[in-house]
Image 1 (tube, rainbow, N blue to C red):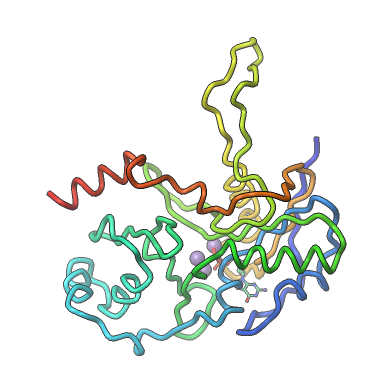
Image 2: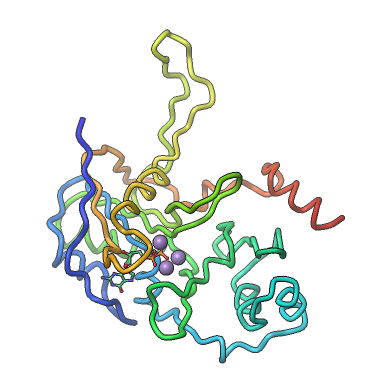
Length: 253
Ligand code: GDP
Ligand code: MN
Ligand code: MN
Ligand code: MN
């Protein structure tokens, strides 16, 4: 088995209004079953989701949390504006963003934007993955999947990895339930989160800095699935998530 990850070269600095599907079509030679992995940063830029802190007016809640965290009140307000729920407010803000994705600072990011502008995550990454994927499939006549990613920290370990935050025509999980291991033991709960694995691998090329590789093509997997759920289907319901329950207990003490 061979699996390749290839950067799309010559991607320009993305501006508001840029058509990402058109750009990828022109720069990449796409095959059937290719998975196009796209950094959310350029999706946000194409949507014009940049802003300045000087345009955000902090309320009392933002000022309170900002004092705790030694952050700018306007930054905290911007995070609150992008959040449905705050699970941890200090020493950093762990929130559920508008798309139900749980992450630090609602994914508001200043890297690779330029000037003192900040960037918000797209509100519905599945929708944008679908817009790009549908157009790429039409232009190429090929079966194409799309994963939109963002770099996130995680619990328990230092360091960040890329994760999937939006999907088009790809199965998020590869189920092993009912399969046998090497010794005939039948697997009962193993479901491999393949879209996060692909996102993580793609980030080996993307990096976090000036690499200039926001689009990576993963080839050699067979995960194309015409009828698939978006990423939000894989976010646990609050009542079923013991970690979230624990955080809420601490918060409400
Ligand atoms: P995020 O994880 O979605 O926040 O994206 P990053 O800021 O980590 O950037 C991921 C990759 O995309 C890095 O290789 C950046 O250099 C690259 N990148 C970000 N914006 C642009 C852009 O507008 N044009 C190009 N060519 N590369 C970009
Ligand atoms: Mn960034
Ligand atoms: Mn980011
Ligand atoms: Mn990144």
